[in-house]
Image (spheres, rainbow, N blue to C red):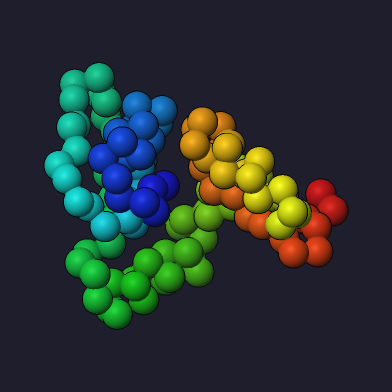
Length: 105
């Protein structure tokens, strides 16, 4: 699932996935869908209106989209610099910062 919409992040998801990539970010440039992507399917929501957002939330509520895998790191807020470094080095997809420390696993 991509919520960024940047060409680089979408193409990374396409290269790392064999089944479906869900696109929720705003597309700013064309993506390259190549033969190496085999039978990969791209899906997303239609347009960028309230109706579209409600459609996306509906998919989540119906259990058709699991957002949990997006958060790859939970860090206390005081480790913000570490989380930023993880994102910049592509070792994290999304970092959730907790002002009181992350919840117990």
